[in-house]
Length: 294
Image (cartoon, rainbow, N blue to C red; front, side):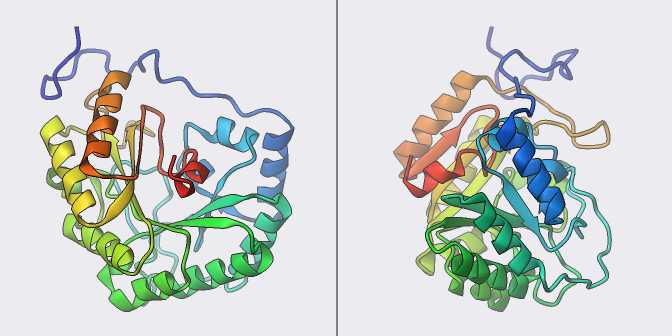
């Protein structure tokens, strides 16, 4: 029997359901990417965030590069990226190194994300802008998605990234309004809506994502989806939250595939151009399809 969203979690919830299956990394493409990442001294969110799709994506020749170092200044309850104080240190050569690596790969689409850098006055926006411009120079035919933080709500920093004109501007809401303070360190629900709204007003396709299974209700998910659509977001991803370790926020519920499909249909009905919804969907999963509207 299907459980309602608000029912208490059953005993043994830590055991993953049969529809949560991940592919182990293997094959020539996987090993090539692994070697390139090490050679170029790159950080990837695939590794840092313990993404369940790393085997599938790397085997297919796609990855999500993480810039601005490997230490995040925030400590979100869902995230496995290491937290610390980078002390204002920035690798000014990183934009070129990332651009060269992507050129070596010969990709048609790439996703670049970053840690939050609240230790920097601009949140790292100048590195973001330079990275986008260098990628354009080295790979003029490549389409690019940037998955950024909120830059502390600083409009000038956000505008610096917008003006570099990524093909898709992405910023994840992560969870519903009620759970934001509990789950997202130093983030604000309204601030996330604002940066997405500003990106859309700038003429950039805006994208966001929500994790399910953190303790939200179905009504809260639909309300968040409505808020995102109202902010001008046209691409939405919905996926199951997976707990990285016992120290992280617990999985409150396993959301069934049929419920993801129901939310996908409701999202399309709200006017989203793309709604990618399934248990193992992540914001960068099959991201190349989102440029084409699939």
